[in-house]
Amino acid sequence: QVQLVESGGGLVQAGGSLRLSCAASGLIVSLNVMAWYRQAPGKQRELVAAITSGGTTNYADSVKGRFTISRDIAKNLVMLEMNSLKPEDTAVYYCNAARAVGAIRLDYWGQGTQVTVSS
Image (cartoon, rainbow, N blue to C red; front, side, top):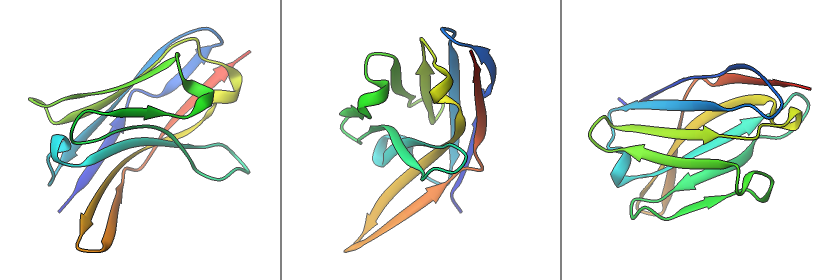
C-alpha cells in the first residue's frame, strides 16, 4: 500500500523560506517520478516541480530559480525547498508519485500541507 505523508507547511512572510518533506512508504522514490503540486483556493491543481527516476528535474515557470526539488534516497524522502516566497505561492501543496503499469498511469497523492505566505 502506497502512502505519502507531507510535512513542513506553515505561515511565512513574503521573502521567507520553507522546506516541505514527503515521506513515502510502499514505493521507492528513486524508482518513480515524484512531484509536488499545489492548489490555491478557486484554482486548479498545478504542477510545481518534478524529479524523474534518473534525477532530471523540471519546474513551473513561476517557481524557477526559487524552488528546488530533491530526494533523500536513504530516507525515501522527497523535499521541496522554497525560497523567496511570494503571497501567490499560498496554496495546499501535495506530494505525488506517478508510475506506469503497462499503458496505465497510476497516481498516488498525499493529504496535502498548507503553505501561507503573508505580504
